[in-house]
Length: 242
Ligand SMILES: Nc1nc2c(ncn2[C@@H]2O[C@H](COP(=O)(O)OP(=O)(O)OP(=O)(O)O)[C@@H](O)[C@H]2O)c(=O)[nH]1
Ligand SMILES: [Mg+2]
Image 1 (tube, rainbow, N blue to C red):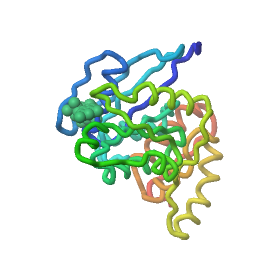
Image 2 (cartoon, rainbow, N blue to C red):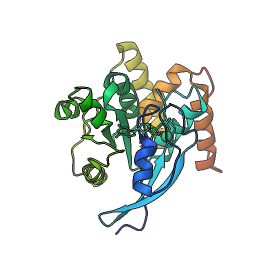
Image 3 (cartoon, helix red, strand yellow):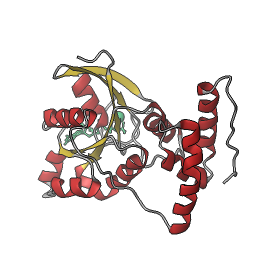
Image 4 (cartoon, helix red, strand yellow):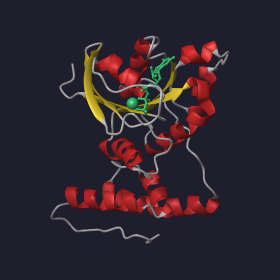
C-alpha cells in the first residue's frame, strides 16, 4: 500500500452530481440538490479502494476554467497547480453537448483524466443512448457510465482511475489546435515557461493564458515563482508582456 494518499479531483459543470459521488465515496455529507452552484469551495474527503488510500477533492461546478469567478479560480488552480493524480470530469449524460466544453478545458491542463458520464439512469429514461467507446476514442481518455445516485458503475470508475494512475491505459487526450498565428506564439513561449517551471506545470496551457492576458494567472505564477525559487534569481511575468 502507498504511504502517500493518491489525490482525485472531481471537476465538471454545476449540478452534474460531483458532490453526490463525493458523498457516496467518502460517507461525508456535502450539500447536494437540484440547482447549480451549491459547492462553492473545495472540500476534501478520504476513502480506500482495493488496498489503496485516496484523498478526493470536490471542486465547485464551473462552465469554464478561465477564472472569471472565484469558483472557476478554485477549480482551475487546483487542477493546474496542485496537480491531482487524476481529475475525474463528471458530466451530465442528459446534456452531453454542453458538458463537453469543460472536458476540453481540463484536457488542456492535464492528461491524467477520466470522464464519468453521470445521470446515466436519467439519460436512459429520456431515450438518450451514448456510445461511450466512440466518445472515449474521440476524447483520448477513458469514459465510464455511472449513476452516482443509484450507485451504478462506481467500481468500474475507480478501477479506471487506478489504471490511469498506474499508467496501465494509454492516454492521448484531445488537444485543441489553434490558428497558425497562435500556435506560433505558443511555440515561442513554451520553452521560456519550461525553463522556469521544468515540466511540472502545463506549459502549453500557461502560454495560452499568457497570450490571453489573464492577469490572475500572472499573479498566481509570480506567487509560485517566489515561493519555489526563494533566494534564487527572480523572474517576473508582467501583465501585457506577450
Ligand atoms: N437521476 C440521477 N440524479 C442524480 C445522480 N447523481 C446526482 N443526481 C442528482 O443531481 C443533482 C445535483 O447533484 P449534486 O451532487 O449536488 O451536483 P454537483 O455537481 O455537486 O453540483 P454543484 O455543487 O452545484 O456543482 C441532485 O439532485 C442529485 O440528487 C444520478 O446518478 N442520477
Ligand atoms: Mg457540489
